[in-house]
Every structure is written in C-alpha cells, then in structure tokens.
Length: 171
Image (tube, rainbow, N blue to C red; front, top):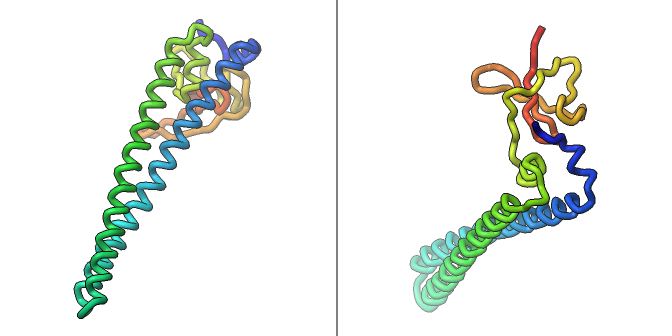
C-alpha cells in the first residue's frame, strides 16, 4: 500500500528532512553547472591559444615570439581550467551519490517521499486509470497532470506534484 504525497508532507520532521535533502541536491546541481561553465571557458581558452600560435607563426620577427608564447600561455591556462572543471564535476557526482545514499538510508522517509526528493518517477502497476477529461491524479488528487506520448504511440500522464505515472483511458 502506497502512502500518498499529501500524507508525508504533514509531518514537520519529514518536511525538514525533505528540505535538507532538496537543498543538497540543488547544491550538487550548482556544482555540476559550474563545472560545465568552466569547461566551456577552458575550451574557449584552448582554441584561442591555438589560434594565437598559428597567427604568431605567420608573423615575422619579435611579434611572432610574443604571439606564440602568449598562445602557449593561454593554452596552458585553458588546460588548467579544463582539469579544474573535471575535478569540480567529479565532486558534484560524489555529492549526488552521497545524498542518494543518505536519502536511501533515511528511516524518516517513506518510499514515496524518497522518490519525490530524488526526482524519481514512481510507476505503480495497479494504479487506477484516469479519464482524459478529468485530468486529475488518482494518487494525490492534483489537477497538474502533464501528458506525454510514448514511443509506441500511447499516452501517459505524469503528475507534477507526486511525480507518479497516471495511465489514460480513452473512450
């Protein structure tokens, strides 16, 4: 028997734990975004360094030495940024794994609450179908149901509140 999303949100201790874990996941996503941004900066610097080296090689005299040495410096800074972005990205992955383990082992959360905080779609095989005109979730009663088309052509609803699958029955 599954507990509906509304029932675990009533307990203030559970809500505190959910907030803590959501903030941890948000922090891990920020680390991942920062890593992606730094990786983009690194790619730009590496490309700029290579271009500067090629431009410097075509120039005669002292300008070529300055351009080539500047290009090599920019290339090395870009490579350093790339290494740092890989380290930050791996830290984000480690944070996600640590939070996943903490959520999984938390005795204060039900399976539905764990799935909600982890943003996992829970699909129940015995869930009641909902009519297209109704557009309400049979699990939590929310009217915020998004409809998606599957690869086989059938449609399925996904509740935006409890993140559960809502099958659709056509007349």
